[in-house]
Image (cartoon, rainbow over all chains, first blue to last red; front, side):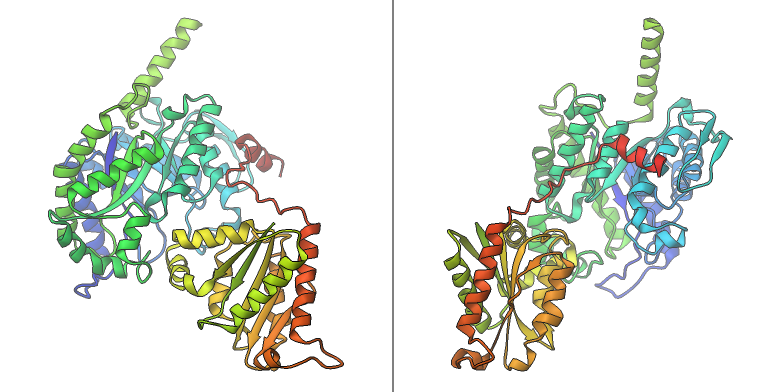
Length: 367
Length: 201
């Protein structure tokens, strides 16, 4: 089981001070948060990809490359790579390069993006969102697995005799998650390839995601990748903690009430009841997170959103201390209990290389 | 048969609810048997606003949306505000999937202070449900304040007669329609088929 954080990289005014960080400050804050994540023992740092204000992370491999050079262990991921509007050839190249520089500590989460104008800005049509995700990923998948690719599709110019360079590290491409909030087509796509499925469940009630995840698990087995409980599932979470629960609520409320995504809507209490958001003591965060397993089955990766809505860097770093010291060690222990032996761990490059070697040896033996 | 009544009056008691109840009664009278569920939009006002902001419904709202989606027939009644349905009424229907009402029998009705607003039913309500591809019965019922205390004349049926006619039309349509089948959420096109669609296109 892997634990980490994911950031959307929003530049938001701190509602308690009225101060808005500059883009430079926000970018530096994100990298400081990533370094802190490794320091407190988390397994994953993930960044979103956005091409519009008020978000800064338009260039994830640049940022993750910088972080890779200053860290040793943490897996660097995207929490969205826009498979619809990025050229799959450039994704293949950029992330293979990052994979080499980070010694394999890289994976990606494919997403379609939900900002209408981004599609035309990048020469695409939002009504083709699903077909773009299907075709572009089919090409990316081949570019990482076949040395020479001849290819023709609907959405980009044809390729004849093309080799994407550098080749993936150790011949094993970065692990891919497919993220979706509402589309069963994407759960089906993840299942077809035997890739991971990340349900960003942080803003919605669990019943909806239970249906999507069950569909993914069932189809994963249908396509012969393993049993339903061997499918690779990631979940989101959103927490704000203080030692004393009441302090957490008091401090977080103005950020909640003014947050870009859900502010000026339901009360903090209603939202906490209906979604994974937990505002309270580390113990309350542990209890809420443990319920995810009951709803969705044993899973592989838990990512928390910690640094949005204008929270100051200092506060976020304090949150990461609490997460790393008081929450994650308990969660590791609890999630390990009664975990069936066949349920896989979170994906790592080393394990995937070993699996590829084992499979290669198996094929040699049978041949 | 499940008959769902959406009433968007704002005062309690409201003449919109009064009209809604009379229409439900008239419809039920013409049906062999019907369960009636009334959705008071006023009681969902906060939940509707929250859903618009957050993108997901609170349990009480998802329950109402599901009732409307699953209904065999629908009676929709709104007060007329600024020459159209009320904003709250529209917001509720904005949150229902735009295919949920396809082929569903619907009776539309409205209330207002003066009969001069009665064509709001034909110029605003009927196009809304036409967009949703519902089957709207020919008689739409408008009740102005004066209608509650007046008889019809040579050219116009009085309110009770219009209610009775509209209820009869809805009942007839509900009975003649097989229950609208709702596609399952998980109905997925197999992946190979999604890929093939791109190749042959």
